[in-house]
Amino acid sequence: MTTLAQAVVVPPRWTLSLWARLFRRLTHWWLLGRYVRRFCQPLQLEGLDNLAALKGPAIFIANHTSHFDAYVVRSVLPAHLRSRTAIAAAADRWYTRKKLRAAWLSLVLNLYPVQRGGGRDALSHSEWLLNNGWSLIVFPEGTRAKKGNMEAFKYGVAILALGHNVPVVPIHLMGVANIMPPTQRRLRPAPVKVRVGAPVTFEPDTGIPEATARLQQAVQDMAGAHRPVAPEPVAAASSSDR
Image 1 (tube, rainbow, N blue to C red):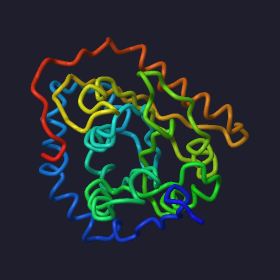
Image 2 (image 1 turned 180 degrees about the vertical axis):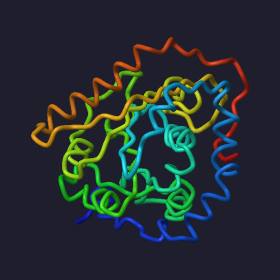
Image 3 (image 1 turned 120 degrees about the vertical axis):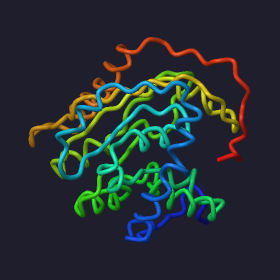
C-alpha cells in the first residue's frame, strides 16, 4: 500500500506558462513583496552585486530555518532572475495534502515538488527546468535546521550543478526563524539579514562529495560574517493574514 509520504507527485507544468508568469510579475508586490517588507523589519541585504553578472540558469541555495525562507529568497532576487526561477519543495510536506493550498503556492511562488529520499529520479524535473533555461531555488539541507544548527547538505545540488555546468549562488539567511519558527504557525516581525555570496562553479572532474562540501562551507562562511539577530518584542500576526 502506498503511503502519502511515498506517493509520487507529478510536477505541474502550468506554473511555467505565460499567463502564470505574468500573474506572478503583476502580483509580486502584493502577494509576496509586501509580506517580506512587513515581517522583515528591518531587512538588510549584502552582496547583491554578486548577481549582476549572472547569465543563463543558476541554482540559488540557502540555509533553511523557516517556511518563510522561500518568500525571502525569491523576493530578494532581481526581477529578471526571479521571473525565470522555480523553487524546489518537499513533495510529502506540500503536495500530498491540501491540494488547493499546493496549487496556490505553486502559482504564487512557482513551487514544484521534489521527492525526499527519491534518489536520482527525484532530480528529473529539476534537470528539465535547467535544460529549459530556468533557475532553481533549493534548500540543500532538505529540511529546516533543528535548533539553529545547519544540517548536512544533500548531494542533489552538486549533481545538478556538475551535470549541467551551472553556477551555484550561496545565500545565508539570518533571523528568518524569528518570523516563523518551525513549531509555530504565526508570523511576527523580526530583523533579517541576507547575504549573497559569489557564484560557485566547478571543474568537470570535481567529485559530488567535494562539490557538496564546498557549497556547505560557502554558506557557513557567510554565517560567520553576520552578527546575531535578536527578535523584537512585537505582536504576532496570524499566518492566515497571508
